[in-house]
Amino acid sequence: MTLHRVCRWLILLPFLLLAGCGASLETYRDQGPAWDLAQFFNGKLVAHGLVTNRSGEVTSRFRVEMVGHWQDGKGELFEQFYFDDGRQQTRTWHLSRGADGHWRGTASDVVGEAVGKSEGFALNWRYQLDLVLPEGDVVRVSFDDWMYLLDADRLINRAEISKFGISLGEVILYIERQP
Image (cartoon, rainbow, N blue to C red):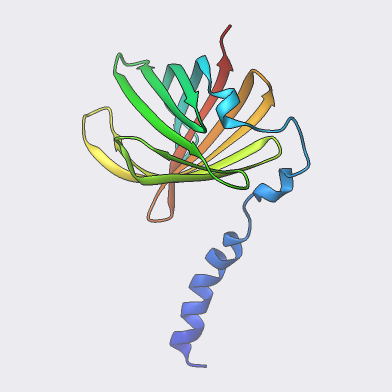
C-alpha cells in the first residue's frame, strides 16, 4: 500500500467509524406509546423551540401555532412561527401515509420530498430545506429530524441541521396538542 493510500485511509477512518454511530429507528420498534402522525397532528397544537449553533449556543427561540387537518390518509399541517427577534414565518406541510409506517411530506421550502418512518414512539424524517436566515439570505440545508412521542398529547422534536455532511446546529421543539 502506498503512503498516499495510507494517508487517505487515516483521514477517512474517523468518518467511517462515526457513520455507524447514530440512533437506529428499529431501537424503538416495540416501545410505546405507538406513534400515529395523523392522529397527533390533527387539530390545534402549540410548540416552543430553540435553534442552536454547532457549539450548542442558543441562537434563536420561537413559538409555533399549528393546525392540522386529515382526510383519507392525507393531511395538511399549517405552521405559524413567531421568533424572538420579531420575525414571522409560515409553512404548510402536505403529508401522506405510506405502507409500513412510512410518511411523505412536501412544503414550499422543502426541496423535493421529506421521507420518514415511524417505529414505536419515534419518527425520523430526512429532507432538504431552503432555510431563510434572519438576514433574509436563503441557504439549502439537510435536516435529520427525530420526533419522540411522550404521550397522546406531547412530543419532543430534535432535528440536526447540516450542510455537506457537516453539522451546523440543532432545532429542539416541545409540541403539545391543544384542547
